[in-house]
Length: 302
Length: 258
Ligand SMILES: Cc1cc2nc3c(=O)[nH]c(=O)nc-3n(C[C@H](O)[C@H](O)[C@H](O)COP(=O)(O)OP(=O)(O)OC[C@H]3O[C@@H](n4cnc5c(N)ncnc54)[C@H](O)[C@@H]3O)c2cc1C
Ligand SMILES: Nc1ncnc2c1ncn2[C@@H]1O[C@H](COP(=O)(O)O)[C@@H](O)[C@H]1O
Image 1 (cartoon, rainbow over the protein chains, first blue to last red):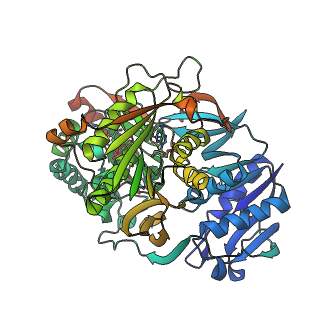
Image 2: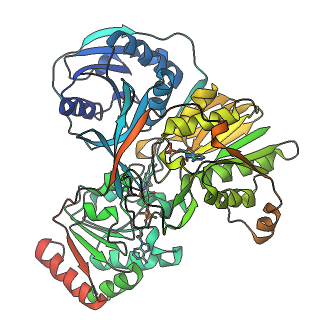
Image 3: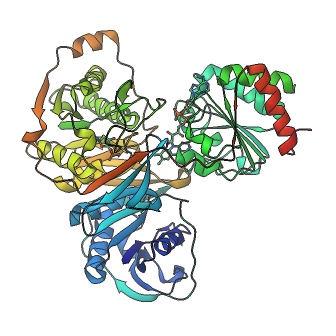
């Protein structure tokens, strides 16, 4: 079995997530070749074949050109699987490659199982086992689901390039909003999720944070709705935290939220839904109405 | 300009999901349905553009599924879409993303749409494939996960959201497709007068067999709950008791309470 792994490079750096692709390939027991649009000064520590395209010519984001490079490499390598990370780069590019080749795509794989690949569904509450019907398939793997594997060594370089300019013009990056709270240093974080119901209830969660001597965190919908500032958002598009205690109030536990907090030492979740996926990482799941439980807890602590 | 927005109706995600008889998707009985959250942002963005462009612009909303999806379609009409297409397919849940995309592309291919809006992903299936695949099949420019959108004539400037809250700015020309991310805008609530007005808007029904020619490229072999990780304590019962139990656990297992 053979895989073509699509590495990632952003703002002049090879991304560490590239090594998760190698971890996945190793679990699959597959041979590997890799393709990277990057630079010779940032080569992965990996001894296999590396198709390297120059980022100066192909841009960090130019899906038309990157797709062409991948299709060319597929011709040479004849892989069974073309593997991406399920990231802003991967979920954008993978369906383009799959559609061009008219082959199956299995998105956001969490594990390799008997008869196919397991993926999450229904907001991570349930799982599906998916099997490609085509001989070859495109796969995207969930960030953090597979071990990082850094085999070491120097890649055998094959320099490649793509012609044309593509239909998209990449203008540049905009930095993330400035953080006025550094949640990364907090020892205790109490986060508000959509389950708190309305903006007026934010102070109730903030009061628990204060009673515990911690900071207020939030899930994305709470931030998008303007209830809490973005600088408090925990998750893939917010901050990554690892406090001694993380209290999730009315948060379902979507993968993008878990990615930002699952390394916390101790996790307490308050949720009225016993099946909420936050239960998979919580040390304690309190099945209760958050607006009844939290004020009672705060009162007892004060 | 001609605009299209694709929406999916999904169950309330706070529901309990049980496998159906075949064990390959959820059992649909006793579920409450609503518009896929990501698609609400897509509808709002399309309606805002339609309002900005005014006369001569037409916004069509499309949904594939059984008769119940007309409810979600009506919401989009009440938010401001001009007309709708319901592609009737009682078996839509069993189709793979390639087939769903092929149906949309087959409908759209000779209609002259300038911009197609979709959600970044559906909340129940979450493949994040349908939008991009439609664009590929139609030969449209495409960008994904947008949190900013501007359109000036045939030029689109979009902001894509990347990991860690970084954004990248891209420009492209119509015809184009964008997939919309949470937080792109603030989706409006349909007002009562607009709900009444929407009742008069046209919903064209098309049987799926007229549009679908493709076989599925992937098969769902099973639908099941996650393997329980175990370890975690689940506390249930009276609030007062729960508070004491939790405080005792925190004192015992963490160093944060003394
Ligand atoms: C590319 C991408 C990036 C993302 N980045 C992030 C990110 O950085 N951070 C992030 O948080 N999300 C992120 N998301 C969104 C994520 O997928 C989820 O939509 C989000 O985390 C859900 O937030 P929530 O748990 O607060 O809301 P919901 O999923 O709506 O959950 C609400 C929970 O509250 C419970 N509840 C309701 N009422 C009560 C009550 N009265 N008492 C107790 N419990 C109650 C419900 O049972 C439910 O479990 C991202 C998504 C994408 C696609
Ligand atoms: N049955 C459907 N009818 C109309 N649009 C759909 C349907 N399924 C998916 N879509 C669109 O495709 C997007 C991505 O869905 P998915 O690939 O399932 O994650 C959704 O946000 C919708 O805009």
